[in-house]
Every structure is written in structure tokens, then in C-alpha cells.
Image (cartoon, rainbow, N blue to C red; front, side, top):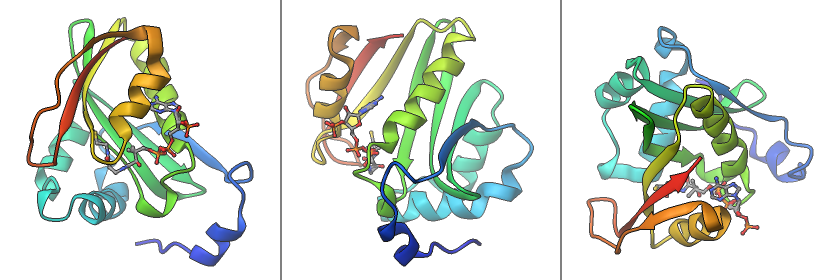
Length: 166
Ligand SMILES: CC(C)(COP(=O)(O)OP(=O)(O)OC[C@H]1O[C@@H](n2cnc3c(N)ncnc32)[C@H](O)[C@@H]1OP(=O)(O)O)[C@@H](O)C(=O)NCCC(=O)NCCS
């Protein structure tokens, strides 16, 4: 498994990070599984999805999975299920060392462009409340937010439901 060089990372500005998001092609799970499982477990600990659940999500052809890379290293991902013209984001996580740099924007814009090309018109998600993500989602999507739920308890902490227009 590739190891991060944190000194290199810290000396890089956000602008110089060569970060790219790409659509995952089912069938190549073995190449990315180590990094995906590591990121998921680092972030969600005992509440993390299991290796088998992650593999099922990535290999499900009804899903759109986007992988975020810094060079060749996988540093984040999202897994989204499509149901008719709705897409539900099941999971989104950026490696802890790369959080707070706005990289969610790179990941989500690739996801949204891919979903639009598949005739999806709205996305739904349960956004984490306690780390401020739900507030960022509300602010970022602004007028595109069609529905906001009340904060609900979940195994991953408080979550807020959003339905957002693509
Ligand atoms: C929550 C998480 C995905 C956010 O990613 P991030 O890259 O660290 O987010 P940041 O806080 O750096 O970036 C947010 C910025 O991106 C912008 N942004 C761009 N596109 C965005 C989008 N589609 N959605 C939300 N914010 C977006 C926001 O406006 C915000 O700008 P600001 O900082 O100027 O207000 C990430 O921190 C993470 O993985 N956390 C742990 C796991 C987790 O909570 N996952 C979500 C569960 S629902």
C-alpha cells in the first residue's frame, strides 16, 4: 500500500496539489481496495463499512463511484446509487490529512458531471452535522437545495437530509 509523505504534503500549497477525481470502473477493486479500506477505517473507526460492503458498493454497476487521487495515491472517494432520476450519496470521505482544503469540490463536481450525463436530476444525501459538513452543504448549494430534513441521530452521529437539484 502506498504511504503518504506528510512532509511533502505540508510543503505543498493547495494550488500545487495535483489532485484529480476519476470515475471508478468496476472490475479494478483489487488496485484500490487497500487505500479505500484504510481511509474509511481511519475516519469512521468501528462505524466504518466493512471491506465486503465497500467492495459491493464499488462493484455495483448501478452505482457511480468517484475516486480522488493525489498523483497515484487514492485520497478520497464517494459512492452513489442511482435510482431513476435520483442519485443518493451513500458515502463520501476525504483522507484526514487532506481534509479542510476544499477538495470535496473536486470530488463532487466530477460526481455531478457524471450524474448529469446519466440523466439524473437530483441528488440526496445525509450530511454529517457535528463536523460542520451539513452547514457547508447548505451554504454551497444555496438555491439548489430543494429539501432539508431535521437533524437525526445515526450510528455516525447527527445527520441532516438534503435533496439538491443538479
Ligand atoms: C466532510 C468532508 C467530506 C468535507 O471535505 P473537505 O474537502 O474536507 O471539505 P472542506 O471543509 O475543505 O471544504 C469545504 C469547502 O468546499 C466548498 N465546496 C465546494 N463544493 C462543495 C460541495 N459539493 N459540497 C460541499 N462543499 C463544497 C465549500 O463551499 C467550502 O468552502 P469554504 O471552506 O470556503 O466555506 C471531509 O472533511 C471528510 O471526509 N470528513 C470526514 C467524513 C465525513 O464527515 N464525511 C461526510 C459524511 S456525510
